Every structure is written in C-alpha cells, then in structure tokens.
Image: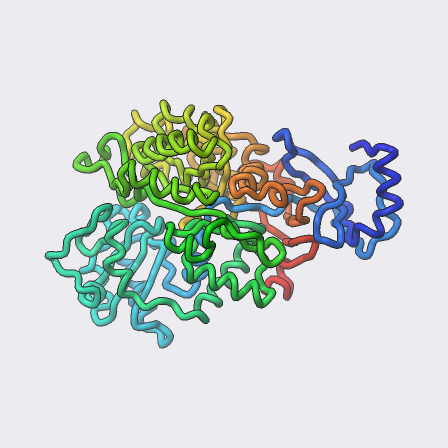
Length: 546
C-alpha cells in the first residue's frame, strides 16, 4: 500500500484525535471493492468504533494512540455476516430437545423418552433438528412412534428444515385434530406429520414461550454467533415477539450482534415498523429492513414446488403457497413503502414465479430495490440469466448443498441437476450472490460454508472432488458472500461487510490463514477473538466468552 504525502501528513497530525486503537502485526485479509483479496497487517480504529485506515507493511504507524494491540501475526478477517438466519429459533432451540444427528427412529424415541423423564421437562415437549435422511430407511417418524415414547403429554418435533413436524396423539387431541381434519392450502397431513401450512393446526395450541425464556434464548444465540465470528445477520422471519426480545436486549445495552430484520409477513412488519423501514438502533445493532414471504416449502419434506413431478414421488410437484396475483400484490404493498422484499423459493417452479413477479415489479419500482430470493436452490437453467436483469439477489446457503446433495439427486433425478445450487452460474450472470447458513437448519458456523462454496464438498472432503464441482466459486467470491455481498443484500454496505475506512471495525481473529488452507482446513477454522466497533466482545477460553 502507498501513502501519499498528504495522507501521511494527515495521519501524523491528526491520528491522535481520531484513533484510539491500533491493531498491529496481523495477517489481515478482506475482499476489496473490485472483488479481489486485499492483504494488510495493521488496522487503525477511531474512537467512534470505525476504521480510520488499513495499514500495509510500509505504512507509518501513528505515534500516539490510546491502545496498541499486538496481533502476534495471527490471521484477521472482517466480521462475517450471515445473510439468512433465524435468531429467535436458534435461541429457543437451545432450550428445547435437540435431535440433531439422530440416526434412526429408535434413537429418536430413546432421546425423546429420556428428555421427557427429566424433572425440568415442560408439559409440552418441543424438539427440533431431526432429519429422516440420516435414517437407514429414510422413513418419516409418525404419531405412533412418538406415542410409544411419550403417550401422556403433547409432543411436537420439528424437522431440521423447519417445514415439517410430527405430533403425538396427545398433541393432536389438544389441538382438536382428528382423522377427518383436512390440511389447509399449502399443507399436508400424513400419519401425524404436518407439512408447511398444516403446521399451524398444532402450533396455534402450543403455549408461547415466556419473555424470560426468549431473553435467555437470545443471549444463548448471540453467544453462539459471536463464537463463530458472525458479527451481523439478516434475521429472516422476525416476529413481533422476536423484535421485542431484541429491543429488550438493546435497551439493556447487551445487544452485540448486528441484526437486519425481515418481518414474517406484512402484518408484523407494519405493526413493528409502521410506514417505512426503521433507522438503525443501539449503535447500528438493529434495524427492521423489510419483509419475508414464502413461495413454497422445502425439498426434504417434498414441499418445494417443482416444474415437473418429484422423481421419487411422481404423484406430487410440491406445494405452491401463493398464486401470482397474491405474491405480486403483497410484494408491491411492501415495496410501496420502500421495504425490501425477500421471498423464500426452493423449487424451480417457485423460483420462476418469484423471478416473474420481481421482473414485473421492477417496471414500477426499478431494479435497485435489491429484490431477494431466499435459497434459490433449484433453478431452471433458462431462468438463471433473468436474475441480474431484474436486480435480484440470490441469497443462498452453501452448506445446504453439502447436506442435501444425495437427497436432491433422489428428489429430482440426474437429468434435472444443472440448476441445483448453481452458485458459479448465478455469479457469472452478474447477479449478486449473498451467503448464509439458514441456522438453525444448519450450524451458524460460516467456515464450513466458505469451504463448501470453494469445494462443493463437506467438512470431511466428501464427495472427493466435490458434487457438481463446476459450480464452485473462488475463495474471494466465497468470502465476499459472507461479507461485502451479505452487507449489500441487507442494504448495509455503507457501514458493514468490509474494513474500509468509515465502516465499523467489526473483525475476528482466527487460528489459520484461510487463503493458504485446503477446504477441509478452512472448514475447521476456529475463531479466537471477535471484535465489534473496535472492542473485543468474545474470546475463546476466557471470561468474555462465557
């Protein structure tokens, strides 16, 4: 880096007034505005918590600062941004029965019975994160399975994708669901399994979490996120209760992670924000930016809406949640007040519908509204080129590919995979590509996501060579997806997503240089410290991280 005489004079004369922290002797890297990896070894932070200057080896250091931190040559990255997560669900999930990794129906029943036997177990037992694709027979659990483990109390176990859940007989009795109950539009009911819109039949009867439980859950979620180096997140589907919980934490001065909220539908959006997006609150920690809608369900429960029938169940094409007119009317109502619109679409039919709606809306509102498609997992290759032209952002989750690749081949068949998790093809059109995890569906840890993006393989390097490796992206593109592009997707690139001067000094210290690491090593990266606005807020193995 070269420093002009004017810049040098400014630095020497005024640094003491502008900067209070010098982070020096680091192995820093970020993605620059041109999309290339930019290296630096020092970071000057102002007393407002924002970056004053990135420093290279030949750049002079200020003579006077309040604090000097020796990075001891460790690797430094900008704080990572998850472009699609569920903060409230992550938090509440820490207080519920965790069924992740369950390998069979028998194990699910055993873990359920064990949880029910604990003295702290509530009357309604709520569990999450089971995945029948991990079972040898790939069978969905049924109400009879749950009855065998817990017959006398209501049980509701949510699938890992959040789009299906199974209830025991006690839960269905309490909800008034019988064999004669019909599924609502956009839902299915089968053997106690409630898919997508049918879930509401049970969920309407589940007691709402107490405010104290929500507060504890949010504190747990924030601790996890900071420990994984996630300094900002787009919360996709914020309820009024979620918003109020974040406001309580903000009012108490304990909100550290920056949250860009997207309300779950128009009603909570207008109730929370009124007639326009909110300003940033709590030192740019919280903002209601827009609204999220659903166009279809998920592949795992065969709720994703496809153009052709499922290969492994030819009797269905999945679930269409809204007709074209309703989708365009809802999106237009939000766009009218300058709220950003994000729509969940997984199947190729759902994606085509959302693209068409955005193309029409762009004629009225322009292509600079940053229309978002959440997931964009299965696209007809003919539709990929339409994204950039309409200013559509593809908000995708690399670890979904490594979790789903075997399943998606069964669901679609080998001949329909060309547009599946097509990161490189989408980026090649000029469309913006933002990355996230969809936590708690996947882990909030972004490093397996970065590794998957560059390798198309899981943290163990499977399958060798990657699944459909032609859709890999470069490390710069992967890192940008979790930084600059994720900030752009949340209309926050003027303050987040990089360590450019004037942006918040949100950064992390990690245990390895990911620019020289193999994908499996990138996936194993550990965060050592997390800094927000130039202040350390989390440290591994210290009181700050407890």
